[in-house]
Amino acid sequence: MKAIGFKTSLPIHEPDSFIEFETEKPEPGARDLLVKISAVSVNPVDFKVRQNSLKGKVQEVPKIIGWDAVGIVEAVGKEVSLFQPGDPVYYAGDINRPGSNAEYQLVDERIAGHKPASLNPEAAAAIPLTALTAWEILFDRIRINEKDKGKTVLIIGGAGGVGSIAIQIAGKVAGLTVIATASRPSSAEWCRKMGADHIVDHRDLVRNVHQAGFTHVDFILDFVDTNTYWDAMAELIKPQGHIASITGSAQPVALNKIKGKSAGFSWELMFTRSTFQTGDMIAQHHILNRVAGLLDEGVLRTTLTETLDGLSAANLKTAHHQLESGSMIGKLVIRF
Image 1: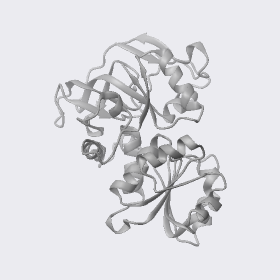
Image 2: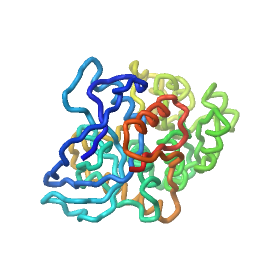
Image 3: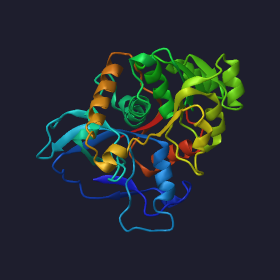
Image 4: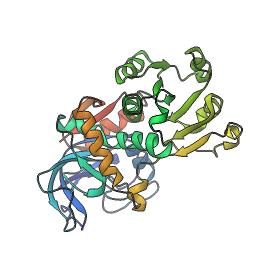
């Protein structure tokens, strides 16, 4: 099969930052699906792994990355019970296994879902990683439930891939009042299109949230940078509120700043369940199926904004360059 990968971590403008190569089509393990891929989307995790995973090293076999895919099940492992050959599926995959930038990929059935029937492959490919992240941060980490309807959530980074679907899930599924950050007219308009109730500029965040009419907020989702916004988040969070972040932290997080408010803090990593083979790993199968239903019902909408045609090193370089610029709105998809 054809695949795109890299042997060492290089800046995206370097000729070998991605290379095309041929490799054996993989054989499914007991609970694996062998998927013939028809579209993938690109996320910030892709370029971060490309930049760092093989820094200062060269490996003989190119590393295949990519964590969002749509395709058709071609074969199944002997213990598979959730899917059968011919089923259209979508998934984000497992960061510890070869990725989706290839013609075929193996994925554990417990972290795959049935593709939304109403969406074409590229529209569906924009969804899995970001929807899983948003769903888990809201319902598994913060544990938002019925009693929280009408409460406020501040989403830092509203126009990005995760922010775009988090606005929708927070407002239309959780019933929260959504305040999203955006600094450009185009990103602010996109957040409104996704359903944000209020838009605030992330620059001078505390003042802008106050000017929007909120002294404190019940929940904060950080999709940009924990350290940069920590002081603002600590000031804005309501007593007994909850902050959650996906971004990691270059410096230790000063949790003492929210101690007086008895506020909670959680990390969210969508790959935790697959990495540790947790007992509830199949939850991602159920989340993806629930999200597919919401998409088919028109409650949620795809966050696709740009499509490139063809599985090629050139297209992956274009996609990574665009995401690295930090100006991406919504999701970029490559259609095979």
